[in-house]
Image (cartoon, rainbow, N blue to C red):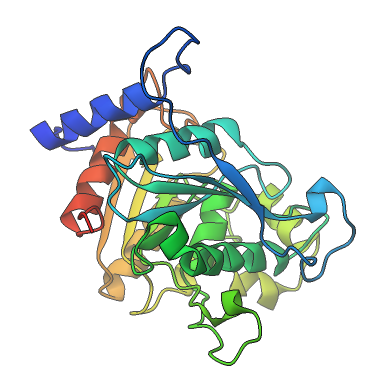
Length: 305
């Protein structure tokens, strides 16, 4: 399906997107400096199932607070892609956080653990990031009931896993973070890996996440189009027809499952565009952030506190 024409609201938000992705101001610029992002370890005393103490063994979140004059109270955990073997931190992390800031949303970039770490380690990191964001709601000026998760490519698989496998927290947990729910309030999925079986699966993501020759039942359990229920959060999906790395059928499968479960969903599939475009600067794909912002607005996620 082709994207609809942008409304006046959509065009205004798209303008904000383009401004958000411009290079930083020079030293002589008199504009008010943005609040600097801050990085936190998700488990200061050591992450579960860790293999060491190096940077790759320590999951973190880097928080970009929404500017005070625009802040809506919403926050989004961002999962960059990279096939569960790397992280596209620039165009699927920092650029996305700056765009979110432009529409008044706090961006929380997740650095999750990668291969040779296997499932459920990345999911534990994503769930912890959602809990961690909620436990810091007052400090960061956000609404704990408007915390979403978004991801691109394999990061989209991780985000959709977090959206289909979650819990409400443990009320009696010693760690206050563990008392928080890890259910996202909404999902935003960019050209996501959804299925791990069949002709449309991304084999590299599957092998990095589960190891080669993984048990078929384990693979099946992480085909996220089969995990959708009525409790799955409302979802926005975007993809391109020309994506050969992660075919658009992945988004279609998830959208169809959401429709069957009567979960609110919106999907845009663009005709042109390779895999991994991020914000899509300079392409028709660059209109998706405006459409997404309009969707968030329509769902009440961008209301001022």
